[in-house]
Image (cartoon, rainbow, N blue to C red):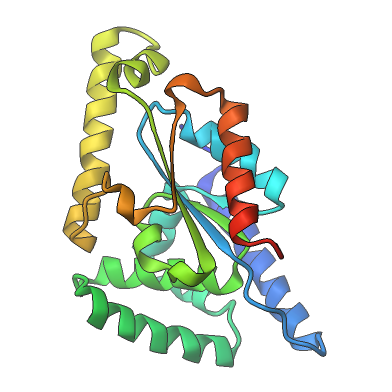
Length: 228
């Protein structure tokens, strides 16, 4: 289920370098760009959502960051600080103010991990133009600049899609992963991950090909953000 074969360290370093370059370019630019929209994708394991995201990113010209990368950035204080340093002073001040209001509004748990997670995802949101997979990003980023997608499929189909050794092993993996993701959302955001009202679009891949799902999300995203 990994997005790339390269190590997480390489992916993180590459992304940090890109954000630093963007920061430098913004300082040198005469005019200030409008914030670029974000796209979050919540995925039922085995629904084909990771492959959908991988094909969607180049079509929209967006970066793609998976849950593993977000988790690594949030777990490391040093990496979290490195991410924050990719914003200029004005953006950092705006982010701090917004995160303060987010904690007050959503009553998020104040532990250190969630603090780092919201900082990391909030910083990525300030840069914009990125697809984020999982880690509750849909509950953190502002709705005004974020298109929130959930990709689902029937349990039997998802188990079948992930059958590599035995059906029992695939079923155990699907249920364990699914329960862990839903528990994460309940613990840190006090939300039900399966509630369709938390999303702008829910795509059921039961009778859709990967390419069809990609086209649907692409069309809906461009309708929501026509200037992207």
